[in-house]
Image (cartoon, rainbow, N blue to C red; front, top):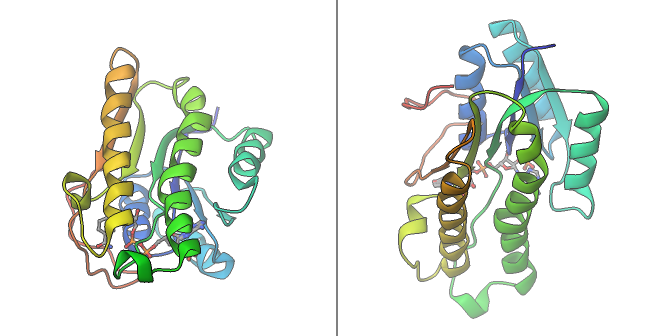
Length: 200
Ligand SMILES: NC(=O)c1ccc[n+]([C@@H]2O[C@H](COP(=O)([O-])OP(=O)(O)OC[C@H]3O[C@@H](n4cnc5c(N)ncnc54)[C@H](OP(=O)(O)O)[C@@H]3O)[C@@H](O)[C@H]2O)c1
């Protein structure tokens, strides 16, 4: 069987791209998901060439109806083994609560909470098939306290942290490790590798 891959959502820029670089450097085959098809293809080609690993770009709007099911069935059809899922895709809204358009707030909850929960549920049965598998949910230092003017974002990250801590306990006796990554505010230049302690 092919070496299992690491699936990273939101890998076309920012923290997701930085994680993809680190995992690639550590010889992990990758599946990279984001909406920007051309950017993903360029990243996949570059990482593949530089680190000699297979990298599959999947251009998908994860918030679109049926997108998570489509991703799951596409990877199942390809028989792609996956032993790590990094739920990284997410965004923030800024401003006084009532001034942020409702569809932006609900879109945030949809991507940061629903999609992350949905992908975790769909992929945990696959992750459980492999020794030393990992589910990494990208939360934030915002997970630890309320955030006026970013209220829904902070609340969404509190959910991610709480869910991840509960799952870590649920799967403690299995080969699956679940963790929340809680970065502070980042200033990442696109397509650069930040100084970071995360090991792939
Ligand atoms: N930046 C920070 O300071 C910071 C701090 C703590 C935690 N975080 C968390 O870290 C994660 C990444 O943040 P970031 O700052 O690196 O974000 P970013 O630079 O804006 O990148 C977000 C990534 O998610 C993808 N994405 C957005 N909406 C998507 C959708 N509907 N479907 C599929 N992919 C989608 C984007 O690609 P496309 O546009 O191509 O789809 C991009 O690859 C988020 O969960 C964020 O909350 C960020």
